[in-house]
Length: 260
Image 1 (cartoon, one colour):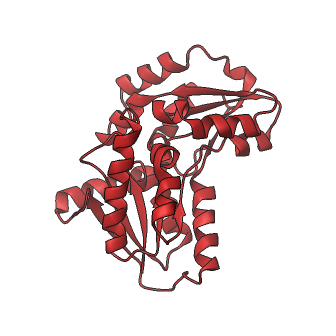
Image 2 (cartoon, rainbow, N blue to C red):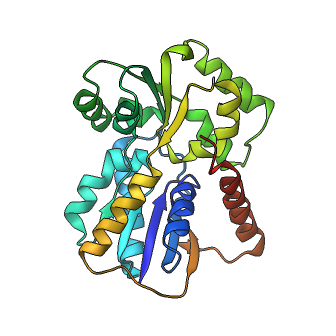
């Protein structure tokens, strides 16, 4: 049985990439809702509809778990999906608590999509973990657009990030929380802009750890021949050029993996 990874676009590959490293004897299917990307600027009702359609498809495929490798979809739709489907559904959360636990004295900047930044789930999370009021939130919607067209290293990307982050005195910060899975593709540019005292934190490792915990709890961890399938909005990806494009994204993630 396969483990599904779902995202609005190719950002969720960053979570799949980590899972493939730690679960080399599992089979995976990656679902990118390329027909409707990006989610972060769409109405909540529309996002729930798109997520439900994707989950219906994946459940019909017989997957044993779904990782919602999208912070926006997690924020808007995961609780409702858990009430509908009787399989493990693992969501993403910006790792603000992890960042605060590592330091607790310096400020933390969480970057995410607009709907994640403004969402109730984020507000509840920050109220729960940020007792010293150290967390700031910054929406970076254009990074999703850059990632979707594989524009990782360009003057436009660098200028955009420098402009958006200019108001912050990063000598006062200990961490940048990557609160959207698309943002991991840009760790090298972030690293060039930020001082060395600011470290990257994301939810990928914790999400995959929770996936493993839930699969083990249901005796669903398996040893089988490793495989990955890719699907765009319910259509299996078979075109060699498109498969090569996806591999290029994964190679990009190999290069970003150890940047801290």
